[in-house]
Image 1 (cartoon, rainbow, N blue to C red):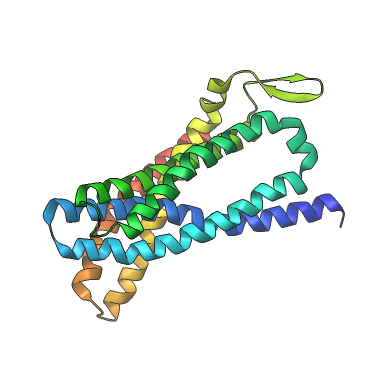
Image 2 (cartoon, rainbow, N blue to C red):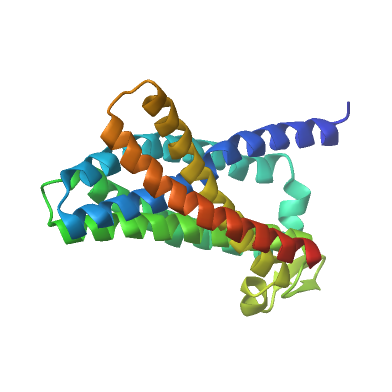
Length: 241
């Protein structure tokens, strides 16, 4: 095998492993935010316990997703240096915005959420997890903006043998992005929901903490059904485009 094939195999394995965790992270963050909202509105401590329990799974997925994502960044430069040199001024922009805006938003408010229980007010703590959920969704948007550019290059001109951005707005309104983003995010919501449904169903079959997992199942099932229907429509839209 030549270097190109080895590079493809290495990057593919990294990307596949990375994406095992990313949709789960996005989906869990959203559902945990819903659970904590229910706790703040109702005062029912069971919803607080649910947010904490599923939050542990979220944090594990988040950590692994970050580490594998960093490996991808290195491989852009090491495996695909010619590509990065040619389109780096365009392709690198949404990746930089993702790191400086979305990821910093996530990581900052994750800290408040983890360590803020009983230390900040309920509403501030709730706001923190919603910012985390928004941050994970924004991360998806900017990463998909870079991916969409690879599928349908827009907003650039070639000068001195390199692609240079000349229209950032075209990059973030790329038609490819407008169909990729809803499909991916709704798929992530469904993935997080069905993870919770699966774990809850297993626990219910074993009759362990029945009320807790019954509530978790119900919340996740509602999100799973709605997002699954959304994925079908978004997928049809993307396939038709």
